Length: 114
Picture 1 (tube, rainbow, N blue to C red):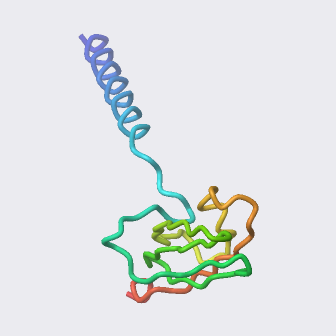
Picture 2: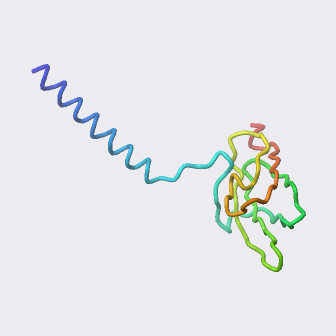
């Protein structure tokens, strides 16, 4: 009887673990550099020119990045819900920027003070 109970418990654990792994794989992981966001969440717009070398943001801030490239402007909405305050290159968060090197400096939010 003990063997049957152990087998049943092992089987239910294995099935539960498999279901959890599948549901986790279907959910995109948040980046350590932040996450894409919706237009409704935008707090401000930062214009990024070809001469821009850095930007300052606040942790948990949602920003519309107006990325100018010649006569074109590409918009990206990004929430800087970062895991740390360590500066990083924006292309790590948004690979579509390509080779442009724009350093992101993340400041503390009022939410960090609580």
